[in-house]
Each structure stands twice: as C-alpha cells, then as structure tokens.
Image (tube, rainbow, N blue to C red; front, side):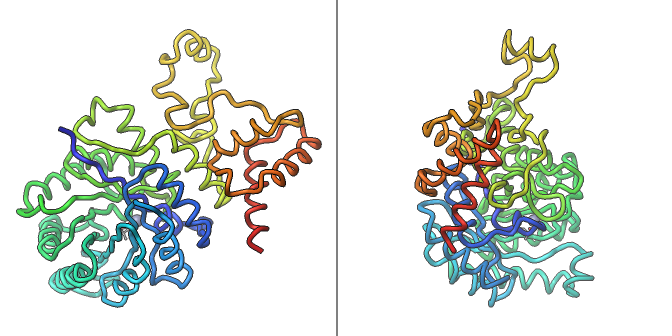
Length: 389
Ligand code: KIV
Ligand code: ZN
C-alpha cells in the first residue's frame, strides 16, 4: 500500500518573496485557482502579517478556492498567529504555518535566544495555534544546520503541542541528498511520537540540489514536500514542483511507496500562467516546462525519435500538458486555434473577452508573420489589467 504524499505549494509565499516575482491580490487568486486544478493538496497563499496586501491576498485566496488546503505563514508569536487565522477564516481547509529558527547560527545572531527559550516559544506558539485551528504546521527554520539532537527535541515537543505537520527546511540550500536522507531517517527513528505527525521538507536550491534533496527525504520517510512552480523562491529558489512531481511519475518504479495525486497534465499551464503574470520567463532548457524540454535538434536524436519516441523521450509532452503539435498562429488562423492555444497557456475562456482579444490578435498577425505565445500572453494580460482600471 502506498502512502499519500502531500504536495504543499508555496509559489504564492516563498515564490513571491524573490525579487521580481511579487503578485497582487487578483494575480494570486488566478494562480491559486490554477493550482487547485493542478491538484496540489495545500497552497501557502502568503504571510498575512507582512503587509495589508498580503493579508488581503490570503483572505481572497481562502474565499476563492473550493476544496484545497490554504496555509498562511506566521512567525511564532500570538499577534502573527491571530492575524493569520483571521485571514484564513473562509478557507475550506485552513492551516496555520508557524516557524522559528533552531540553528545555533540563527538563534545566536538573529534571535539572540538560547535553545531552551526557542523550544518554549515553539511549544507555546503551536499550542496557541491549535486552540484556533485544527491543522497546524511547524517549521524549524534552518533545520539542516541545526544540532540534530536538538532538532529531534524540537520535533518531539511541537508534536506533543499539537502540530500535525512538522517541516524540516533546508533554508539556505546547504545540505546534500546523502546527508538529508540521514537527517530525516534520524528524525523518523529517534523521535518517539513521530507517527503522530507528517514530516515535511522544504528545500532551497542554492547548490542546485533542492529537488534531489526532496526526493532523498521522501525515501527516508518525509510525506510532505514543499515546492514552487518553476522553482521560484528566495535567492536560487525552492524545489521545483514540476520536477519533483514528474520525477515521482516517471520513476514510479523507485517511488511506488508514495502516492502523489497531482494532475500532471496541468503542469505546463501552471508554469505559463506564472510566467505571464510575473513577466519572468524560465530558461529554455528548464526541465519539464522549458521551451526546449521536448525539442530534438541533433540529427541522430531526431532520427531516433521518429523511429521510436522513447529512444530520447522519458515522458510525453502531453503528460505535462505541453502542446505537442503546435499550430503556427498567424493572420489566417481562426478562433478555434486561438482559444485552444490560450487554454494551453493557462487562460480560461471566462477570464478574457474573446472578441476583443481575437481582434487584437488579428491586428498583430497582420504586422508579423507569426504570433508567439509571449505575444498572446501580453494581449491577455493587458486586457485583464485594462479591465481592472
Ligand atoms: O526556507 C525556510 O526556512 C522557510 C520557512 C519559513 C519554512 O521558508
Ligand atoms: Zn523557504
């Protein structure tokens, strides 16, 4: 029997913390609805106390989604937690996510607190949050640089205080798969009450190891992975959701003990919607969703793929919703192809005015030979912003 793997998407919180990626309330709601279609289990919609706008965004996302979990990040203090809880009121399934740093380096220089003080704050915050909300997640910030015995004490304490999920973040992307697997195994084996909570991981990509570290943690027993679309996030980003999910899907033979219910055919649309909202493209060779992810350029490769696709393709473009036989859009194209391409790019028919958008497209097609995806995204994004003015 395989065990449920919770996919916790933090594109709207950690993802938008990266320079150039901030999103307004409406943009967050549009992306949240796509994430619901994608079938992630929980979305972290923001950090409510950080700004009035973020509070509003978490509130609106909570009101807009139908069934997925919605989390709000809160530091380990009453004010943050109360504020977060207020923002989450309308969520179909609300989760308070509270955190405090546990590594010596953070406790000494940032918090100026010792281990016992941090342990008490963690315990009190989780208890306080549990009085408000059934579903509480605790994160031990900078866990991978935390003394492992102390980390185990923290995990045990917050589980006793009522945390349902305990997250072990690799906050600065410092660990490596071989080490992270041992950290998670130690927690699984040494913490006496570990079976009362779900162990989660949250890996940053400073050494390019975020996805590999997340997979190593799954092997050791983690059953929640925190990740972002296109791998966006602080500094070098977070583990890329599409890479984690497709690794599990393509290598089912290695991960048959976990069950991930993400609808992979919505991955490309989620990626495109994010790029069109933020205006930041992924690199062409980005795994799964980059422009070249399914392109075969070398003669030998083209020949191989024509003879038998699996010679050089380990997954089909369709499996991630990547439009495989892209029709060229130009001045002779009709509404049907136009709408289809917009759907492939993540735009629902009801989110734009078809007649106006189609007229703009024709106007552009008269001026250039081929209209690219980026042109279409600009047409629709402009229309959406004009409608709001
Ligand atoms: O990277 C990190 O440690 C975080 C926590 C708040 C989960 O983003
Ligand atoms: Zn983070």
